Amino acid sequence: MRYVNQSIPFLNLRTIQLHTLIMNLDLKGKRAVVCGSTQGIGKASAIELALLGANVTLIARNEEKLKAVLQMLSTQGDQQHTYIVADFDSLETLESKVKKYAAEHAVHILVNNTGGPPAGQAIDAQIQDFVKAFSNHLLCNQILAKAFVDGMKREKYGRIINVISTSVKIPIRGLGVSNTIRGAVANWSKTLSLELASFGITVNNVLPGSTMTGRLESLIASKAEKGGKTFDEAKQDMINEIPAARIGEAHEVAAAIAFLATPAAGYINGINVPVDGGRTGSL
Image 1 (cartoon, rainbow, N blue to C red):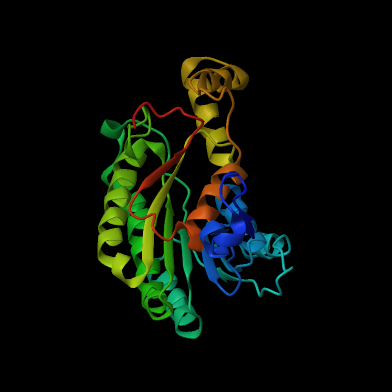
Image 2 (cartoon, one colour; image 1 turned 90 degrees about the horizontal axis):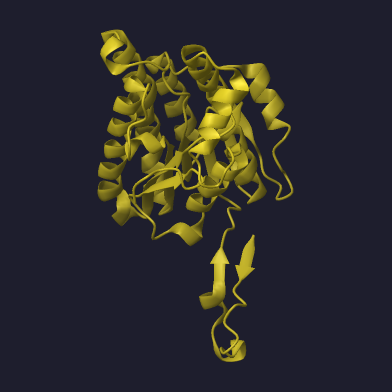
């Protein structure tokens, strides 16, 4: 997909090289691995990347759901899509499978995306709650990045995009474990962005705000129960905090992820991109 900028009427297009006016969103020939891709933001991201021409490899633990999503991906560019069945609770199995895959395929785009830890106060969390979240998020991200980064270096093209949370800017009340682990992933990501930039690899974070996914529904239900409210009342309380006056959709977050994966975003590196309707109260 390419977009020609026609918003500068005083320029004579015949005297300017066309490439200076083209935003390259074409992912044809690129291979993307998308984690947590059977639902929500992961699924939406896989769909968007395929629409831009990428060959998409889905990762999740439910094979039947993986097969279903595979059928939704565009093949208009003659792409070949596939999937890997892996449970992030088993680091050894995940590492074995992605190493094998990396030995056979060059991966250009990695979307790290995993469901967040259960809600609750940090002080009430058990040690194992932190350990499990750290493993599912940071350690799995590290395994995936290490498996694919050598191929990105050879291809001189890499995009590592981590789906985290706006809590890395302002902690969210009632998400103690999540706030803690998301912050660790954000700092891991920034560190990688410094280490890998010279190889043509960018590392960025997309920070969803309130996005209508299964996880958000469970969080709203939890807030409703604790506050003695109905689901709709708790949902409206959440909407009242969003300047856009609505809850976001998964495809809107996926659009930001897809853009960061493209050649057009090659000089965007090491940043956090909130996709939250303006809710986060910081720059």
